[in-house]
Length: 118
Image (tube, rainbow, N blue to C red; front, side, top):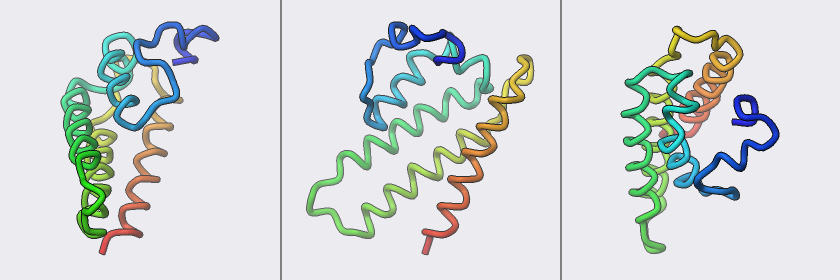
């Protein structure tokens, strides 16, 4: 957002930092039209809701949840994030730098999932 809004980017936010993962996804949803819609396709917008739902399921796990259920919930979040990043860039904008960042994030998450999946 700083890139698009300048040094006063934080004044444009409806949810101020520090953020939880849930807060960050909510910010993406709230600022979709102004910021993210110029970078991602419309299909990606629907995936942000799927990511929000996966985070809600993870946050709802009790302290008595098994290690396997926690790990599965974390993997679900990563898989939805990968799907979100796979939805593509909105090529109607000149987003080459942003595209590289999206591709880099996709690779990091994909590599992490591959290493940690049983």
